[in-house]
Image (cartoon, rainbow, N blue to C red):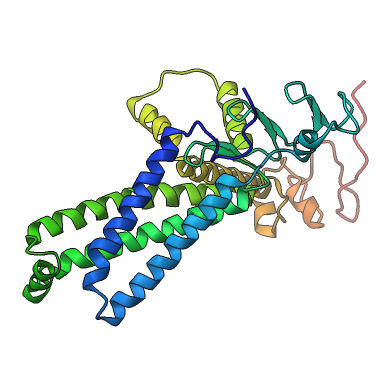
Length: 333
């Protein structure tokens, strides 16, 4: 299999084609159903301008993400000519498939058949690998698509609410040649539902990657760490809720990131409590008086001598001044 330099090379992925169709439907429904009816209001013009800017940004950053080659610099240099240094000592790691030395965090993608610098993941929606070369374009594309779908949802809701006005219903029928308002409502409603689903999926993926950036890891490194953690835990029968939670984390990676952040917060809180429990605390006088003591030692600790023979410890003798002798009594013969 030949190396894929970018995601616009054939064969195309089914997810990639599906994303093209979905974006085309969003654009067609917006400019075909919303724009003609809202060019006469300031709010409509503002929404159209914002939507156009977000849709254009999504297309530009999507193209840059797909067309940028995220391969390791050593792999790119090898395409031009033979590398100056080859063999296992050429880099920190050596890829026997690409036959070139690569950087430490470079990984080989079997779908693209190339080593990707700071490999994050292979994205089927753009049909290419996400790495150091196109990661910033990928994040910008997610933000732009999230804004676009949010505006698509807002305009669909606005259009459906506008159908409660009789003048807006007449505008719909006049603009689209007698189209029933119910058909218009169904089309905008379906557009809003599709935009809501797309916004949820894109936004949770964006927040997941923001969490990865905060932790300084890639998606690949995060998955490897999670698998190692799962392998170290003892196997135990899982409940139905646990199985549902596992499936949600597989399909919604932001939930895994949230759970990881919660676990880290709990570990830090437990460490602070443990540190506070072992820290020595000063003992007050009332606490010292409440400590258990041996018989006859309370008054000697306060510095006063016993006042009578009954107060003196066993084996002590009285002298002329009434003070207790500190010398022990001789042992019986």
